[in-house]
Image (tube, rainbow, N blue to C red; front, side, top):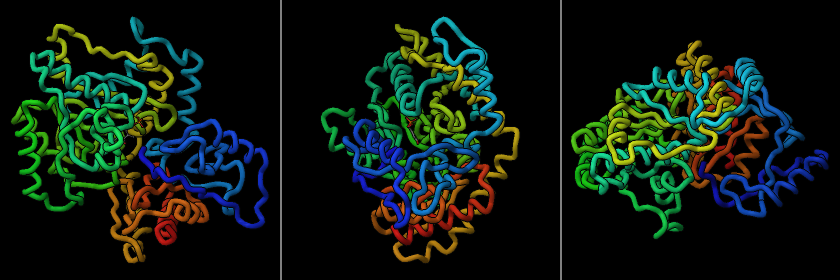
Length: 450
Ligand SMILES: *Cc1c(COP(=O)(O)O)cnc(C)c1O
């Protein structure tokens, strides 16, 4: 997840708080040895030390700003949708550990991965039937890109190897995903000459419920048409652009891309790594648009936030195309592919999600955020407040002061991680109403002080 590249020291002690020497020692080692996301080395920040997590609360090793426990407003970056230490997921993990935590996937298979793949095929849109289970979101995007390029190669069209996306996106930090991240947020200037150069359309106009802009739809069609001869695929995040800037757009633009891709012979890859598993109010964001992509990536909430795992799904058409080539196999096979422990937890997480009224819970959390943020738009420095599904965003008219905003949230008993010009939250779906209200109040405090 892209973060501010300017480190701060957000967690000063309040007067009267006793320095915990064990924790201070840990932090010193951390700064010396451990890279953190988008951080310099040696480290310059002063991260909070988490001792344990349960339900929707993170327990700190020592109090920060008077708080020992924080309500998690971030679901650990979209992933912990059921909260922490959920008995059902804990039991699935223990049960699987009793059998095997891992075996290789070449020449072997096992029930947890098979059941998970079949379940994903069943609940995903349309005929996305084939599932590649891999290590992380970025790798699943690498696999999606490889599938797309190999599809056209196998059909004798090797010149179709570029990707088209729109500005403002985020698809991960490995090489191919980085090339389709927003050029500015992704710092393409740092990598000029090294990164594959992809085709960028303008960013989609904001607003989930906004009337679709016909000019923009025409722009998308024109871009796809102009570059179709060299395009393997269009890749975008449907409906919510997450880490590239937390912007919502009309599902009509996803439909427009599906039409343009069909018309001009280009594959459509939808990256549902952030949006999948109910976060936007539909199980997958593509379902707001009634669109089935040719290839779809899932990750983040797949294992309920327990361990890293992602998946790349594709249609029989893509799989058959790849099989027609002189190299008829998908040449990818990570060591921990289909990891049984991750698969078992993911299977349990999906069962848990689908066995309850997840739609109602997501709506309830969204309504709580909307109510709690009702006054935020009138705060000085606030440009816009938006809520979709269980995602709340307060956009400021200036770059957020990360240290001040985080301090304000922690004082209010909530963990938030603002970035660029926004304070946002996507709480676990199990967050109770009074905790949602506290998250919204902390967002207001962070927006006021950040
Ligand atoms: C987080 C994210 C990724 C990258 O996933 P990692 O597991 O961090 O590699 C890719 N695409 C989207 C939309 C994401 O939100």
